[in-house]
Image 1 (cartoon, helix red, strand yellow):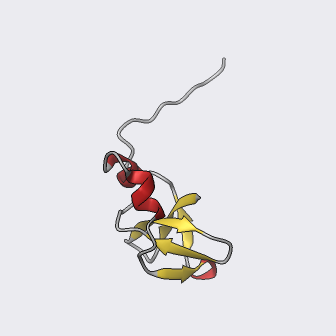
Image 2 (cartoon, rainbow, N blue to C red):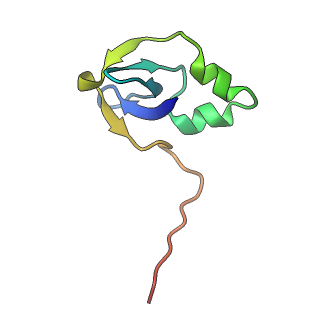
Length: 76
């Protein structure tokens, strides 16, 4: 199963299960929120519910839209 966060317009994102030519929207704003929803998130992501959109009609967004922390590594 492939998961992604997709953009559905200017201010709307959704977690989605990605297939070859379409994606199925999940009721979470991003993949991070899906994972944070607790035990059983994998089963909820695999449920056969949600709107279907062609991949040509959506664009990809960062997996976790609002991360709690960012870590950067540099080399001098």
